[in-house]
Image (cartoon, rainbow, N blue to C red; front, side):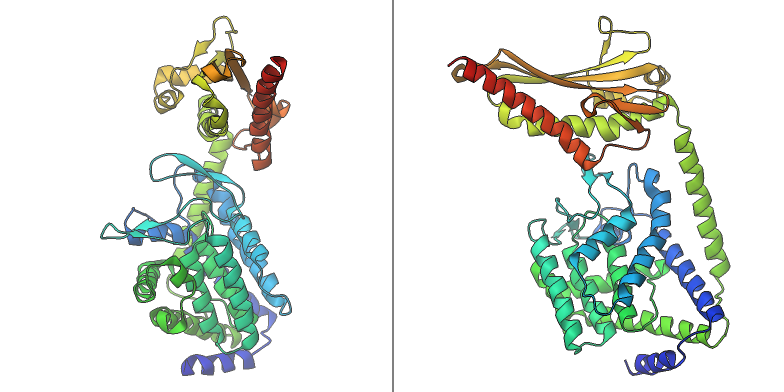
Length: 460
């Protein structure tokens, strides 16, 4: 820490930087920030690799549809941190942390689960599913449960504000301990590692330190150091969320190392010296290469075939919505002996009399890359879903023998519509908001209740 204190004094003594030197330093940091945030590759379900997945924001499934926007959102999140850090009178809040998560993840999206299913990631909201990982020895390593998370986050933010006010910890110690405690909570479904590293810079900037970067080439060392701390602190999530500084010494040493590098680089910039590194050119090329690929993919998505559009609607909207409705209506389903659903599609040349029934839509999607299926998908103009409850149990004989609800999705060339949302138009690769989905499900709950109430009251 003595070396860092010396460098920090030199750095503060060089303030303010000239406009030219500040610009060079900002450009260097932005290169490092974007490169290292977007240059993490590969994952498996081992402890280290799954932790890498959770810490560095690697996603699977349909994430490519979001990558381009997320890449641009990195800078927006950084500017948000810079703005907030300047206001020394304003304490850290949970609302700011949630806003940061919402900013870097852009919008709600579906993600693949370990069992191959899909679940909705709601940006800016604390997790609703456990995000534990499997260790190399096959044991479960638990982050805080969804039930524990709100209270632990409230405690974390309160602790940080109190420690900042006391001033007993130096900025690097405070940032290190906050990062470690935050990661052991892992409060969001996605983006936790990026948030942790942004908040480290939020803390350092409040004290006038230059921003620091965890290099992607050093990610294994970074994760191994955190793992050493996990062993010292213990596996209980509550212990992790209340770790003490002496328990995270390996991580403090790591953070001191990257802070020292940031100070040395910043001092060079302040003195007008070169801050170019040997691999800067390669980093710029790699970023441009990725941006070009994402732009190509983005344009490709805009020129999808009709079959591609239908598959996305079925996979990312229809199936989750269908399952949501079925799960929501379970309370009513137990009154009946039988529940089922009919899934029907209409082609441009068919009508209700000769519509084709989809026997198992999951298998239908799975085999969609065959020529026959692709042709069929291209010809679809609408999908109709009907949920049916049949044969009320003996004690509920006053109910109708069949109770049905349904909705349809109409697929145009540029837009699709959902009947239960007043045929509101959605462009392809965009989906109803959370509130709109809740509105659809709520409509069916109300409809089922009204039909049951009408039958019972009518029999009195």
